[in-house]
Each structure stands twice: as structure tokens, then as C-alpha cells.
Length: 223
Image (cartoon, rainbow, N blue to C red; front, side, top):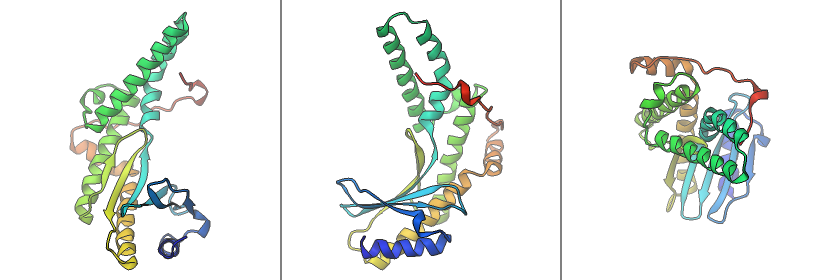
């Protein structure tokens, strides 16, 4: 463990009043110098990640939405019914391929912030669209507050990401910049989880506020 990581670990433990074991040194990829996961329990029930790359880039991120899983749950039922009725293995494979393509198409629409048609459908997909809309709004508010580029990145797992180039910076400068961006990411996640703030935002846009329907766990399946 580098001296910088040791110092960062000690500062994060003090900052968030967490235990040393809450910070895990993860196995870096070939393009990474180091990666740590910071579990903020018990003050917060989530984890942030900090990754330092060989090219000097340092990235801080947190997951907010399991987009692929959520969208897949919504469209799975109609494809499951068709698979059950399918008589040949090739037909089942074709149906699965259609399911995967539709799921990716919806995620791509979310990436491009094309939410209109999903807001018109009552139920879970409407709620998924609204929470993703809210996270885009959160990223704007955090950028304005901190003067940082905090991006809401939509993918199979969606979340907030911010990064900077540490090339030529001293360890003190890197740590100061890291902690500033950690503050921004944590506030973004906290704001993202505020239903009250989200509902106020939706109402200001003339969008109906609704809660997602609970699904029964024993009915959940996979293609």
C-alpha cells in the first residue's frame, strides 16, 4: 500500500467515523495503480469507489441505480410467456435475443434522456424513468454547487462519477482534491436518495409523483 493510500485511508476513517475494515484495497486492473472501496456504514448504507489509473487519472464513483436489472424486470414477463409457449430451442434463443435487445434499447434511451414515452406508461417503467431523470438533475445541482464535473453515468449499473488528472500534483494536492470530490459524490448520492426532493422536482416539471409497486419475490424469474 502506497503512502498516499495509507494517508487517504486514515483521513476517510476519521471523516466518516468508520472502521478500518470498511475500507477495502481491491485488486487493480492492468491499467490501474490502485483501487479502494469505502463502505460508509453505519452512517450511510452504501459504498463509494476510488480508482487511480496508471495515466494519472483518479476517479471517484458511487452506484445509484441498477438500471439493467430494473428494466429487465419490467419487460421480462412478456418474454417469459413467449418462451414457455415456444416449441423449439432456436425459437427460445431468438426470444431471449429480442429481450436483451429491447432491454439495451431502453437503457440507451435513458442514456440519451429520452424519457417521454416511459412517463406515459403507469407502473414500474414510469418510476424508473423518473428516478433516472432525478439523478440527471442531481448531477446538475452538484456540479453547480461544487464547480466540479460530476456526471450521472447510465449503464447496466448507473451512478455518479467524477474524475481529475493527478499528473504533476503532490500527494497533499491529490488528497485535497480527492476529499473535495468525495464530498461531492457523497452529497450527490444522499440527494439522489431523497424522495422528498425528487418529488418536489417532479412536481415542478408537472410530472405525476408515484411510488413503485412492490413485486412478489417468489414470482421473479430469469430468461
